[in-house]
Amino acid sequence: MDIASISALVASIGVIIGVILTVVELRNLVKQRQTDLVMRLHARFGTREFIDAWENTLTREFDDYRKYVAEHGMSDVAIVGSFFEGIGLLLHRKLIDIDLVAELFRESSKMTWERARSIVRGQREQYNEPRWGEWWEYLYNELQKREQTLAQP
Image 1 (cartoon, rainbow, N blue to C red):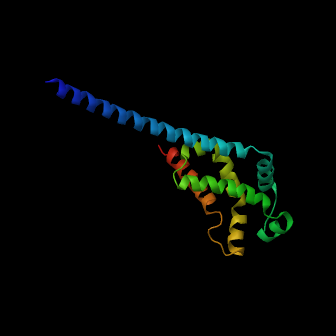
Image 2 (image 1 turned 135 degrees about the vertical axis):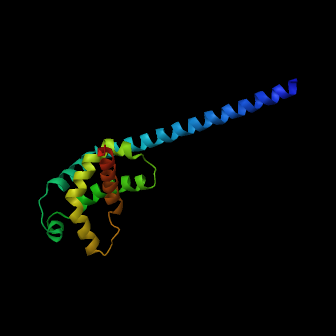
Image 3 (image 1 turned 90 degrees about the vertical axis):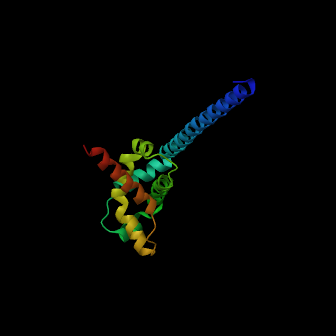
């Protein structure tokens, strides 16, 4: 082998190593950005406004959508719903990892959807808007699928 061949071989190996390192770094960057996003969402989850709305959504007794709206309005459910709706949309677009979401929000999103489902469905009917809360429901369904998958032997 002559010097030119060795130089070309070394340059090629250098380019391949550079590409591999770039791909690894990009993967790490994507994970870091997803983690940052989920942690910012978690910070929102811990605000006084959200906690108050969440507590009201979970504890108010009701048996009828229209009666609930007349007595309590929709602001608390809207605050909570828009939070979980956003997470569901990000999950659908694969911008966040379901494992991260499940570890931080699984139980809270599950019990909140189960409690507020009839309110969301009442709004869908009242305003003839069948897609209202669809990403919140999607989040719930995806977390349920994940639980079932993990529970299988």
